Every structure is written in structure tokens, then in C-alpha cells.
Amino acid sequence: MQPIINYVDKGAGMAQAIRAAGHTIAIMDGVPMCSDPIAVQAIIDVFDPLVSAKSIKKKAIDAYAAALRNVIVNGTSPAEMAAWGLKVLQAERVQAGETTGTELIDAEAAVRGVTRTAMAAIVKGNSNGLTALETQISGNAGKHKDIIASMTDWHEVSAYDFSNGWPA
Image 1 (spheres, rainbow, N blue to C red):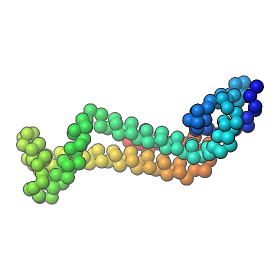
Image 2: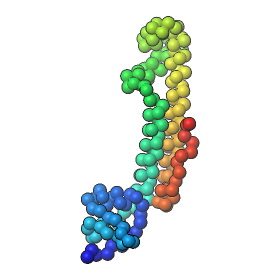
Image 3: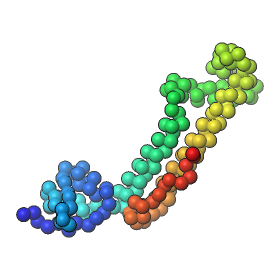
Image 4: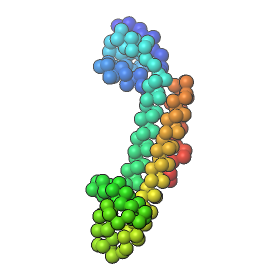
């Protein structure tokens, strides 16, 4: 027979911490059963549910933000994404009237059959749209994580709904 442990529900993170330590716990007919009662009780006693709940919720927010970013860049190759920073810089140079350091804009404009000024405007227009979406995603993720950071009860953190404010 296992010694009885003083089980206190401290959220999903506690079960994760018990498993991470190589132990198991299950509630059967209202009775906590575990692989090593002494070790599991020690984990339960020191487990901080607020820290765990905040970590879990912040990871969920980061995952949601990453999924939105992936939708935005879906179909964009890594090579194209890698070139965007330089293309935007060169587009800004063209818009400022510079004639050097604009090789990518000049080459793409020539292939496309448009002026370098038109190409710079196209690149900046695309960039501005993507930047606006990224700003919304990053700002909203940060706002939700700031709210979570200010919370003092793990139940409140666990119940917090971060679904509002994201770009559609």
C-alpha cells in the first residue's frame, strides 16, 4: 500500500513537473496514486503554480503569434524572406534619391520592366503591409504577456483568454 500524499491541485504544470522528474501521478476514484509518494510529495510541496501557469500561458501566446506569422509568410521562400531586409533598405535609398547601393531594386526593376522608382514603391508598399501586421502581432503578444505578468493568482492566469486583438 502506498503512503497517502497530500495532493493539492496546482494546475497542469505540476503534473508536467512530476513527469519531468521521472515520476507519475494519477487520481483514481479520488485517491492520488503515484510512483514514489515521498518524491512526488516533495515536488507538490515546493511547486509554484503561479510561475508555472504564467510560463505555460506565455508559451501558448508565443505559439499563437508564431502561427499567425507563418500564415502571413505562407508560400514565401526563405530566400525571398532573406532578401527583404536589403530590398527595403535599397528601396528607401531610391526614394531618398540615391543612385548607389540599390542594385537589387535596379535589377528587379529592369527584369520587371518598370522604373526603379516604381519598383521601390512596390517593395515599400509590400514591406509596409507586412510590417503593420508584424507590429500588430508583436504588440498584441506583448500586451497579453504583460497582463499575465501582472497577475497574482494561477487560476486567473490559467483562465485568461488571449484571443482578442489579433489581426484577422
